Image (cartoon, rainbow, N blue to C red; front, top):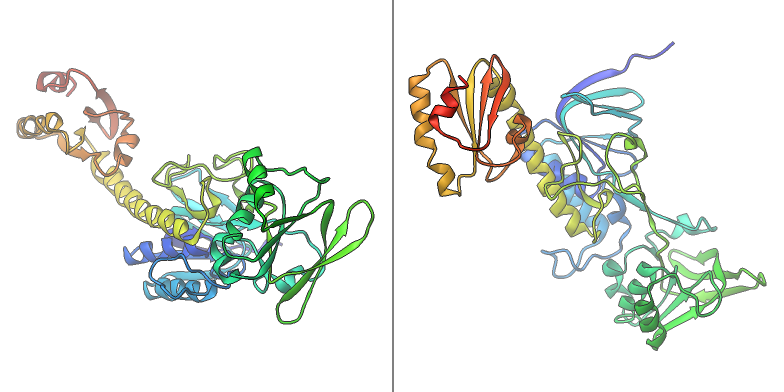
Amino acid sequence: MTREKKVEQYDVVIIGGGASGLTAGIYCGRARLKTLIIEQSYVGGLATNTNEIENYPGFPEGVSGKGLMELFHKQAKRFGVDFKLTDVKKVDFSGDVKVVETFRNRYEAKSVILCNGSKPRVVGAPGEEQFIGRGIAFCATCDAAANTDKEVLVIGSGDAAIEEGMFLTRFASKVTVSVLHDEGTLDCNEIAKAAAFANPKMHFIWNTAVDSYEGGEKLERVNLKNLKTGEITPVDCFTCFLFIGYIPNTNVYKGIIDMTPRGYILTDENMRTNVPGVFAAGDVRERFLRQVATCVGDAATAGVMAEKYIAESEIFEHQIMTGNGVAYVFSAIEKEQRDFLPTLEELEAEHPGYRCHRIDTYKSDGIAKRLGVSCCPAVVVISNGKVKKIIESNICKCEVEAQL
């Protein structure tokens, strides 16, 4: 017997409770939108595994990732954001009402923000889970300063591994790199390769992979296994950095949201996906840099855009697309386009059966896109709640009146 799911309605559902999800929640909650954050495991995401963050503004002495995320969480709750610790099983973004389903519940929302993030690839060796966040790290930019004058180990030889390893040499006394390949072969670009070989702090152990991790309260050493001989080489290190790639948490959106071949979500600069009303922010989207600060910036934009999308939906459905009307789509910063506004007032006075709407695209082109307008200025004639004509050239009073 199939159990009927409980249905709950929200203005915004945010999937993912890391730095981006919490920030989006803060913005939506502060805008007095009924907001829900769904997090699969623990609130705070990957940032909670970072021992110390020294490059996030406002914390001159640094802050732990866990401590920073606790502040984010507290602020989101202050603005009335709801939290559910569960896994999203299914989504349906095909209608105006977006549906997010978990095992027990069906959440319906006017807008959804995808903040699932990504997870670093791990090697799966014994002891790994025990030392993540306690000697195993994934971000040199975040943790480099904490490794000043320490010996560190880097796993991987791609662009990220070698470039991050080079960055670590500014702080660490020694950077050892475990490489799968024969001596002299790296997976990174040739420029990074040459720079790494020329750096006296960079050392390489060839034909090796992680066999196990050892330590007490914190990681103390990593045992590397030679892939040809089977010999085990113990490497003492203060931190082991894993740079073997990330996996975006986007499986549930395949075939629904446009992604890169690697599974990262594609958005425009306003965090809009290919589906109206669905936004993405943070590490889950295709981007150059993945940091707490960039997650916050993305999510601030996504939160504001979700609020704007909901407000524009109300205007579009309940004001513009009712009865007969004339919508003038323009940019308020362009004088030539502003010059038509007095003519619009004349049309409004002379044709009382038509409501005139002024659609300024300076800050948002959402309503313009819904009307099918791709460039400004344009006049849209609406008849009985449907678009009758879009005039994009030779805009004048007589041309508009001919369509009424």
